[in-house]
Image 1: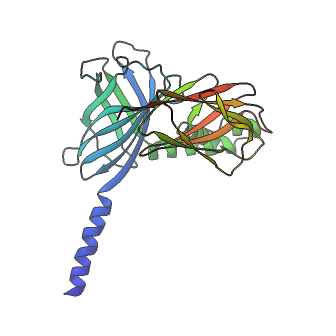
Image 2: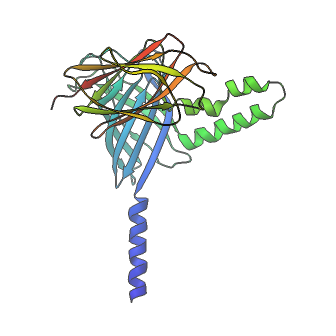
Image 3: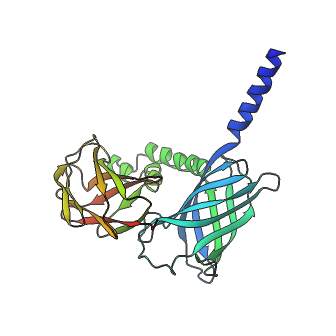
Length: 294
């Protein structure tokens, strides 16, 4: 009897663990009325007992890159996925309450890590639920994409027609991985919506140590001077001022390997953002923290 109870407990525990699954998709959105519009799109979410929570990123590594909270439901019996973008976490676009069109999707999707795909129409709605631009969503599961990209990478590595330096520069797998990193390039401004009065900011080398040096400013006040980035994280606890708080990164050199790259992590009450500044000597990029009203 004791053994039977243990078996039943083990089966129940396994079903509970397996009820939570993570999914990741890459692809494009196409806007109705614009045949040439192809905007990159990444969707990452957790499905647990029919509930879906996660985030989306539009225009990956582009000038309008935007990350949104998504939530929804999944009906495994009907193979039906329903999700909506509900809140902006960050954006490289200029802030305007009426300019952001949120994706609302309802369609047939069979969730399977290896072969999943999302293909169907979506409705675009403003924050006030009024209609904006509709379109179509075409996404493939990350597992399937990675297999195809790895196959291409292996093919490139084996060929003798391309020199090693070129192989490293056009490595497809590395390019795919780079799309998962939020890069800050020359002159860009990332607007981050924040939910606390303080911020923990960490800085360290994004790749192998090569002697990159930066200045870091908070509202034009220098908080890191001639800072040599290393693999060791330097952590700053910053009390945010009222209004917008601007953190500017300035590259003082390009180390042994150009460009100057620094990994930045922002941590608050319930949010964590990983960013990578990717700039040349003399260039700057910045992060604007917009505190949410309590």
